[in-house]
Length: 403
Image (cartoon, rainbow, N blue to C red; front, side, top):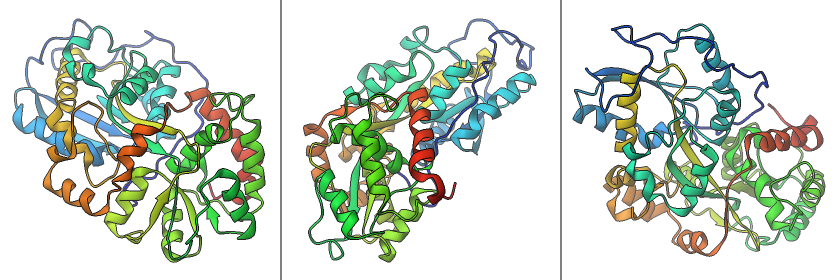
């Protein structure tokens, strides 16, 4: 998943006020055209403004720049901005309400996607434009399941089975606990040695939170309010041995490297990429707890309501480009969102040489078998995730978290 210096995967609560559809008119193009059918391509090259709230540009910026360079009649220039997922809804709503929309495309994770759907912020893309996005027909099964979370409002562009994994240095933990009960026992015997970051601010923390109901055999892994009795009891017991929860994953990685903690929550990307960068020692090891299920993750492209048709045409052509196999191969990156491709038949041999070198040195050959042999579960929906974060903050993290 992420490069320490570029991304802390964040999620958070969003407001409940609904944006009434159709109550405003967006700024138009140079001709004043604001509504109408979306052409196959814009009448002249357009400028696009892209907002990334998921760290996705780490994977796709080169792909976007390649499209611009090779399609001068479609896109003349792209400006990039980044923000956090909790800020997304307010930012888009404010621009739409002021009729001053200056964001043409948003790259987001499940949190921003779902919150925007709930608030009525996104343009419906499917099924009307499915024929313009043939790469969607080639999704991996896990990516296809993640696409279902998007409904008709987003397009999955990158995907990975995330975790939950545990990560440790073998010289510090020669006999790692590989079941949930043994991890709890290890934490009790070694206070302060086990750590994960606040789930609302951390991909590995969030993945651990959503993965425990499967590991523990809870009644309903998709219902954190009424179906997670074992999970909340387990986290409460584990909490007795954790003196502090960092605000983000990067701190847990640095603590592991410094030896101040011995075992941390991790994911495939958070395992590989920090070791490539040298933030975590190369010899760090990951493991799974017995009976684990993968909790998957994805990044999506969404269009705010109010993007005029010419720009929508350009965005659709860009998304078509991002879903081609040769471009998807670039999502291997340096393990940032490992593996990364959302479509089938994109293997590492197709990736750029830099990616192949990084994965060859720092990747984990066992991940392929783990992905093939363990169930893939989609994450919680927006409402359920917010409920889980809220309860964790109140009952677990409370006075032990820097938010």
